[in-house]
Length: 174
Length: 448
Image 1: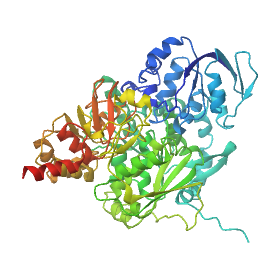
Image 2: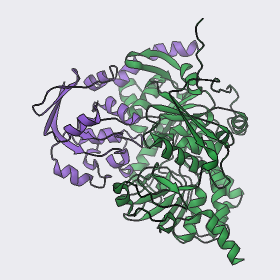
Image 3: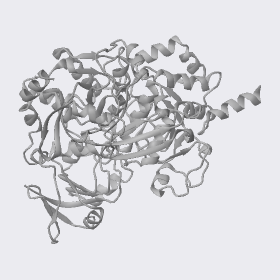
Image 4: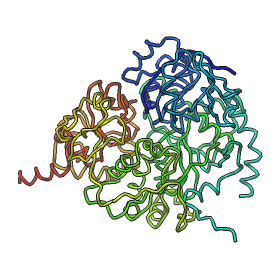
């Protein structure tokens, strides 16, 4: 699985989920309709998006996705065509939400992220855990080996469903 | 001889809930309770209905409520509430509808649904609040919550544990809110990432249960997985007084000399009433102080503040007392003590954390004090804290708030938020600028 596209650079740390998708849009019972409001909560969000039309990979600073647990942040990214986020670190809940929704969360050192901010296009080999910016050399990264399968093939709930008998046995013996 | 492993409080709760170790350092961790509210639950409940025949692991391990937008403000939020309402009824899930509801992190402990040693999850980041009762309680996304409802478990990486000892005792004018903001300022806005914060020390033991909830509530604002506090006589007395009055729990403490990945010591005697000036909760300073000269320019640009400006010179447009951080009866009493016999000079919204808190406040006559002062006394809701209903800010306006997040746009697009304790919010509401409760007392002396 190769995720390839142009870059939306957000050269700041601590982009919280209220900035990614403001709470007043969280009024649906499904995961749809979030993409059109992506980054509306970020003071320069709409402007940044207009500067980088068609981008599908975000490169940003530390602690991306902090704050509210709203999975709507991952749904908003997907709804607007974003398939990956590259950052030095992610907030815990967003990190898991990204995996569960097939948004590839790539963690790389700050220096590497700084260099990637200027890239025109990035190609991410998810299975192989390497990426290539423009015509540069491959850059390795690491994904959680268990959660990687949810990015490649979905199936988080199916996986947990397969564990129910084990859980019931554990609980009975508790 | 094999060395005895000395375990933290968190380690003990975690170890007692691991069903299975999974690849990549993950574990399948059993959840004793799943809390479900109307904003984040419906997509997960619908996914289980469509893909797995509406089968839940154990409906008795779920408690649901309407809390964020209560009552519904429009057709869309009405559908969210109705989806949770019909789902809970169909599944036989304990459900707290409007009238009998509350903010989940206020209602769940006050009903006695959580006790020490439990694991709890909810599609809400402030679930860490419940760590005050010695539970491992964490916020998760909608899909993870659905997994916990379907299979009784979360998949988690084992967090590290940071011991945060608060020594001494808090000064009389410093509150748990000031303490939790000071902890974030000390370890940093993302300093807790990857950790559980295990709060201990004399100043923590001296807190009552509501104050411990305020402390744990903002662990997420330091990036932490959650906070947790050992159970003691305060915990036991609190639980015994709840309607659920759980008895099948045992007190848990860390072993002496337990090993921690990190240790932080903070002098409780030095905690001052603080207020935030920036755009994350770690950006705060004593109310009597100034905007720091090294404050990030980006934060100050959004907040329209200058370095060196006295915090007490900042005029406000609105005041809010409420949210899962500071909306319990003790918070309302603290606000009432300041507002008694005074008049607010800006729109002031006071929102109790649950309908039970509201009724208790009215028994004590607090609602008369608030309304005599010109404040709006509402029913329970998450309210304007997240900019969703009941007091959303206009762009460019400034609110001093007892809530938990001062992120750009949090309480309304372009709105500016200053976080503080309820007494500071009340004093600010009276003077129309950021103010300390001592100023109101001093004014009384002069007037007398």
